[in-house]
Amino acid sequence: MTAGGFNAADAELKRLKSSDRPAVIRAIAEAREHGDLSENAEYHAAREQQSHIEGRIKELEGIISLAQIIDVSKLSGPVKFGATVTIADEDTDVEKTFQIVGEPEAKIEKGLLNLNSPIARALIGKEEGDSVEVRTPGGTRYYEIVSIKYI
Image (cartoon, rainbow, N blue to C red; front, side, top):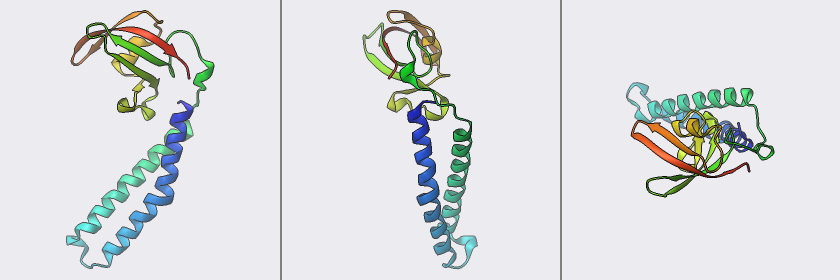
């Protein structure tokens, strides 16, 4: 896991424990005061939210307890975990930049690419200037590696 991913997971865990959990407990208490729980939509919604929060807390605690933080700035060479890679679509010349990260911290909309994704698997071990073939559910695409950075 990158240091950024670890810090984000730790911050989310702290927020869930210090803010979200107490808020949902208050919401459950308020909903109980409204009487009959069998037809109390607020109560059932708050309990469902509590279940979601508790599940996420357990998930984050597991991730954090098993995390091995890798200092990406000390890496170099071909594409590997932690690399920030700029690729160009060989058909359209559109460039995209991704950082290859572990599954818990992957967010494609933020440019954080899951290590197990088809694109990341195709990029691993390649160098700048290499062409890669990526087989995706949408078809085969070809990309050229424009740059590799470890920041």
